[in-house]
Length: 474
Image 1 (cartoon, rainbow, N blue to C red):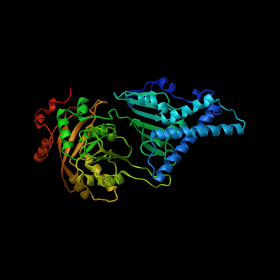
Image 2: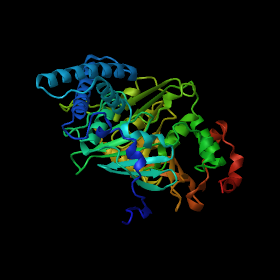
Image 3: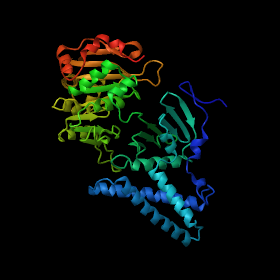
């Protein structure tokens, strides 16, 4: 049989090692894997009861204004719920004359459910592999992409579509700072996995449930490390570091999976530790507050979806407005993709210099059109001219990332634009770094003298510009 192909890259046949690691129904003692087996019935009831009780408790705590439970508190609650549910199941089976499982089997079923809910079940071996960058699951079809660009098809991580839905539901229920629902009423969910990976799942709107997991190889990274990996050269390292220290407002642009979040983390690493940072994301991902030495004063805020009644939603735009009341030194938006562009640019122009964000865009110049399009979606309904004036008064630089041709693994800074002014229907900007050989950025239009002076005062070594093309890694 010919192996399937994806983007002309051969995908080897599924590997059995992953499936073997999955604790499925047939692995349970006393279970034959059939729907009527006592152990399987117990397992199904325990999972349903635990999912319902955890969700009920989380919602009750939210309504009462209590802080979110810690992982330890959730596990203690889960153990108590499972013990009660197992006892109730035994009473039910006794009453109807059903077959009971042995005490040791019952405990192993409880342990298996705990591992599924508080571990990552069949995803665990994939997420333990540091070379896997992307995981895409369509029902029982599992595809991974490695950091070097290789793609493979692996064995299923669950026994059925229903188990995949339940696994996603369980993971989403304990993600981030609050539960995220996943059912026919909310068929789309985005959340963060333990360890920082970002998961996006759909059901009902597709023939089979599907989940995509995006992992970042560099949870903590510096500009020096990006230079080591070939994303920037020595001149750009000095330039970008000075840009952060000079408190310039920056927008990082590029296509999907091109390293925008990694660049944002690297720029943030250059921020002095005494500054107060407010990060705003749709799904918590940046994790700047995880390093208390580098960033001890961080408030990470996550947008909230509407509840089952369609109420209670809090958008990124709402959070940006709220952040202005929280005495931030800098506001960092994980991804600008809607009307939050207005409050963000307001934040940038109201004394929160040095703020940052990312934006999906194919070119550095195209970022301005994208910002204007997003601004129109906001309740302010600003005209194009007003939007351009606001952007020009707030934004200082656009840093654009790209993948060099034929280099699946490599990402480079290819362009940097300095925002100069707004002229009616367009933003006036200078491409101070332009794409050179293989898209690697080289000096373009000279910096304005006042900008250059500010960057030199912040530590930029301008003498490196004379030898800029010598510094890119070969």
